[in-house]
Length: 321
Length: 249
Image 1 (cartoon, each protein chain N blue to C red):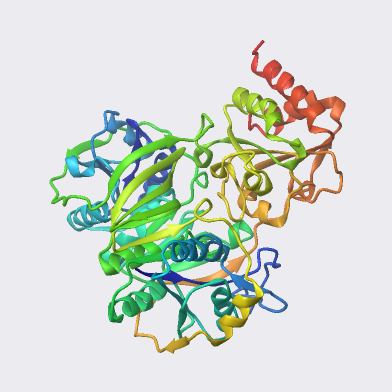
Image 2: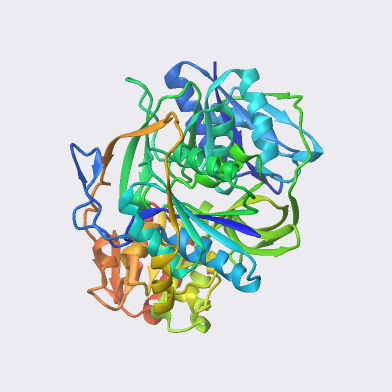
């Protein structure tokens, strides 16, 4: 039997979240004595044998013109065929935009229980129990899956990528692929250089910055840290920044290694979107700002004074002049 | 055009998260309940905007849950919508919810052209309902929509992808999960609140369904150790700590 891992790709490279999913799925396979197999749909120029470095033994690739765009309806039917042929009992997705569209459809097709938003390896000692995030990171739930086939969508940044020796075997899979009903007519990239949900470091700012014209220093700090940009809800609502940068309960939920919050008070709704960050740094001139209670490091000070100093200090430590 | 909006009841965004009964149940004492924000602010309001643009549009709301969900349904009707349906079962998982709603859609005299859900509920954060529903009904599904326009029988939807947005053309009927960007927030007015009292709220009995997932135990994340403060004239020290101690830069 196998653990089947769905690999998501964009612009010719495998998404980081899918490398996490591959590492996670391979670890489950080790635990259950199964084989880790990956599945990739569409044409991609990247070297797929390298998935072996994350523990994948075999990669099934389905190439078909109908798979050029991600249509969840079409994709789910293809994944179903691969599941049947590989006799996979556990299927792993990343809980990213693609996984969120496809995994629920596949769950219905296979009558498989789905745990979306897993944050840890399943406990297989007694049944099958997966820990997932609930209440927007303010709690977790251990879920049992009772169906024969089980689907897990792993939250991005919840499991570290495993790197070791290994070469995966790549085979072409011949599937029946129907034409999609949907048509992608365009795409736009967000303002930042790094995708928010995939970023290791996120620099975020709030109303404390007083106006959109003051974002230059935030952008510069993000730039030298290789970080994605984010903002609080009032900032997005006032159209100082695009809504796709809004993190929080009603915006995007993120879990980077480092979250730097500048001039954000830390309302409970904001914390709900960022509380899974591994390290939180807060810069706020109000020592009573609730965000300090959720922070690992903090500076009580004026953003306009502190941020330029941060830029200089980061440049120094990174050896950038 | 007929739109179905799926409405969920969730604890208020500021509710204290705690558990009872050996950590198997959410502690409901003292909790304020609200319409799941994604369902309200984005799914329902966008449906109302579409009805304002085309008054012949019919909006039905649907909730899968117990009697205690009715105040939330009335609150949603105060914002807009012509009538509501409550399916009388407290669901264990999204599969149960989707099964119930799919059945209503199949039984409807003239079917729903558009089904809107929120992108996820703020309690279970699953985001699975829309996709499951779409598969059960064999319809296209656009997840995480930030913009929705309709001309004739084709919807043009913007959806979030990693690091950007994608524009997709989709034929009706379809299912869409909604998030920020879809609509401008609004609050109910007195006329709406009065009107909501007399709008039909139909209660239907559930169909049988086998639960596929279940919560065994809830828990709280480990508490933070406490913040380490650095003075504003010592920013170098903060960056050094992030580099040497936390090892995140």
